[in-house]
Image 1 (tube, rainbow, N blue to C red):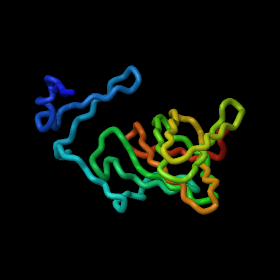
Image 2 (cartoon, rainbow, N blue to C red):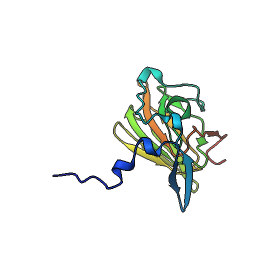
Image 3 (spheres, rainbow, N blue to C red):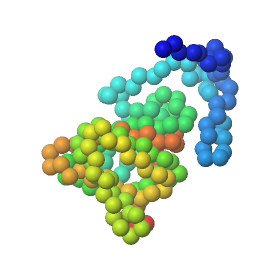
Image 4 (cartoon, rainbow, N blue to C red):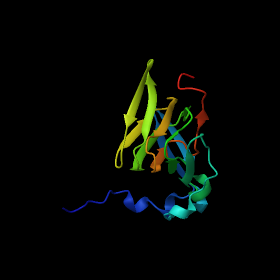
Length: 169
């Protein structure tokens, strides 16, 4: 099957550097300027280059892969989270950020409240979890001997983490 090129494809690239780029957030349009130093190039972040200097929650270890500090990203944050064996994280939420989670390894459980009822999402490799803004939750790793590893993508440029005393907070 032949792919057709969009008529404006030729206009993309260096000619757009420094100009505004629009992102839709609900009914609003957020405009940010593409930095001149973005370089018009892809960024390769190797596993050993993840940045652990990011917001943390007890019982978890987060490391940033794609963010302003590592790539110059303007609108997304993406990284890795590890939950040690037989560990329960502290309750938390991610403010106004939507969060997408992809389970790489292990069998993490994601816990939240639906009204007054505790709901447990038991996941495994290849599963995805969506966390809406401001929803208190926690991660658990029931495995006695294997880390739970997930990749996280957020709609905010920085890692927004609000640690809580309980899921009911």
